[in-house]
Amino acid sequence: MKQQATLRARAPGVAIAALLAVFGAGLFAMGLDQGHMFSVVEGAAAFDAMYLHELSHDVRHAAGFPCH
Image (cartoon, rainbow, N blue to C red; front, side, top):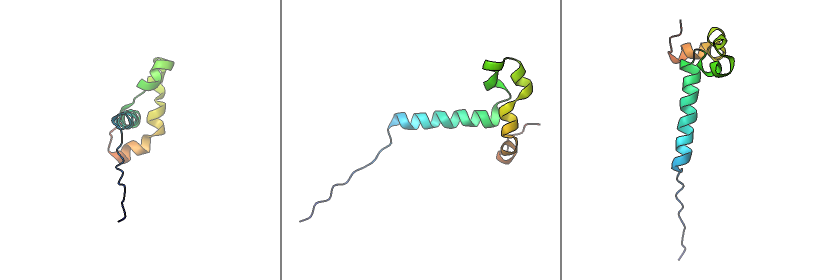
């Protein structure tokens, strides 16, 4: 008689939490950032430049985020 071992692969909760955190940070950076992320480094000048906003401008419109 032939025996087969079955393995169940399960993603650990830490990996799922890390992926959700990365997804949330990416969603914030792409959709909601108006200079907030770089303001930590650049100060008030980041609100005028809005680098991430301009970098992802067309994606923002395609995803349905209003920006102007």
